[in-house]
Image (cartoon, rainbow, N blue to C red; front, top):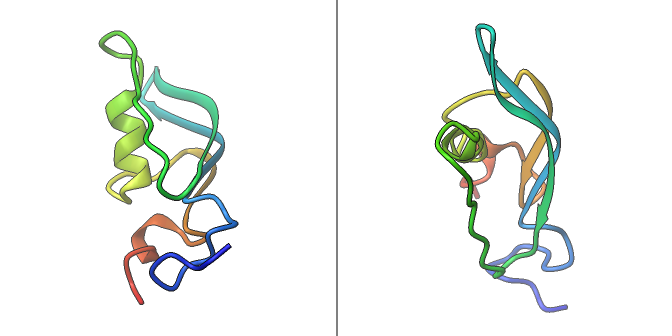
Length: 83
């Protein structure tokens, strides 16, 4: 595939592997596995308290997971926007 903005279009744009996050005794995110291709549109749906915002915060690098792996174009979230 052709590169998108200098990035390898064959790798996932966003990849979450066994992602978990807790706040004290509250488990906000429990072992999420998700792969989103570059250019793919995805919606996170669920009831209040399902962990949608926490997951987005982790992908954006605003929060750190307790366990699991996150990559954005093959890099850790806080480095994904750097050239």
